[in-house]
Image 1: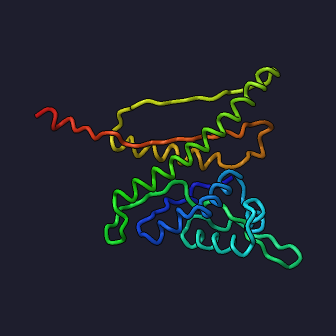
Image 2: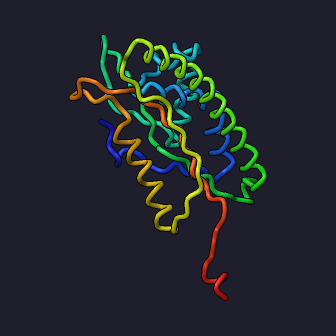
Image 3: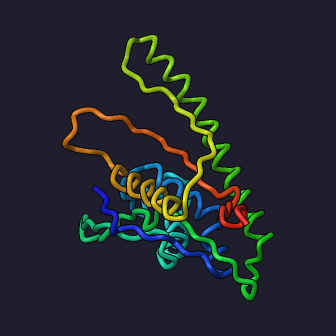
Length: 206
């Protein structure tokens, strides 16, 4: 089981860090490690993304130096030590820094591009698993289906902070298989939380 203290908030506050993190190949590596729900070696990552070990090592080293991934444990086979890597973060904070050319327009543009890619991948995955869900229903198997929630809620700043921590903690606590359970589901959670408007009731009361 992964522990909450193993994770951190990854802070991107320079153009160098921004380029390291959002490199397409490194994003592919992060997506792979995230989707596998287990620690992966450089050899395993290289095979899955069909890249040479040397290039994979280079990209994973950059991610490790950034703090995006880290070695969870090591194994030794025939005298060769292999590190097994996991994600080292649950969310990313991108901070504006005009001196580093991390301007508002750049951040918004790149974030939207990144979000659209994730959204498109989720749509493809949703279509696939929706069909499989109906197949299980026809086979009289137990299913939970797909649940959508799209709603505005009104939170205080403290509640907003608690919601973010609640989601992060839940994801960490359930980020790997439960060996003590006889049956469970591998469930995908795609969640977006963002502020639409800041409402100041004191100003409205004046």
